[in-house]
Image 1 (cartoon, one colour):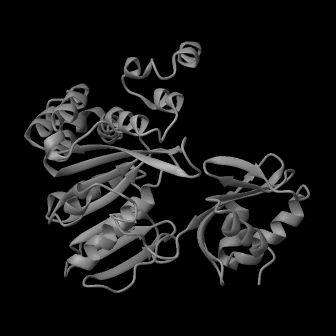
Image 2 (cartoon, one colour):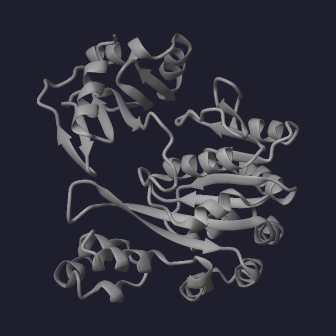
Length: 358
């Protein structure tokens, strides 16, 4: 048993989502969205490096020494599985660990809307789950992949950095590839996937122009492509994809995206106001004829009104999702105001602080 496993045991016992270890600081846990210091001594650089290097394969230690960054997954026997990120900072080594559930949750477990199950069964198209770091994007996608794996007799390929949720054999064939271990990059694996007879391709993150272009190509040629972006709304997601490309190529990409996009799910995790824990709010954009025309004509600012009028199809804005949570007493008014698109709709629930922060 590695020495660092004692911290993972503490993470498990407290129900924390993350563990932070940093040279020159005490260890920290994130519990219900807030950081809590562990009653432990300040970690010195060499001491922390010894803890970190004990669980990292030698080839990855070498990579970290050369680049100052490292991502991998670690399974602590009898405790759980964790996504690890090592990095260097001013005081020395540091690391962040995210707890990964031992079993892949179902869409019902997460309380996600039925439209996500329908999206997971579509024969083709691009489905994007977006949001800030720590908003549960990987968990939502994992639940969608599980639903597809249990209900389709198809070939699913996942490309991840690192592999987080491990999918058990089901009706579908699932092959999971890890960047750095099984393939050189997202783009290389995605290019190869098009020759590997896939029906569904999960791309852990669309990080660069080449990966985005290949994902669009895969969606256009009859595959269901699932991926993530670090954007905070459906409209900003569309803008981000287009803006990655040079100006002379943007009309072409706009056209391709308008044809291949199926949905954008933007989500935020809030600290609950009524009980310990966190609660999810989702914005859902579904690509209908109006949405496709808006993307093609570069009128992305009109997407918000389309979502407001598309409730019967399963669409909703983040503002509407937050208003529902506010009405149920599950989130704080100030948190909602900070994340709102139309802040005037939330002014009455956080008037004083909102005025100071505006």
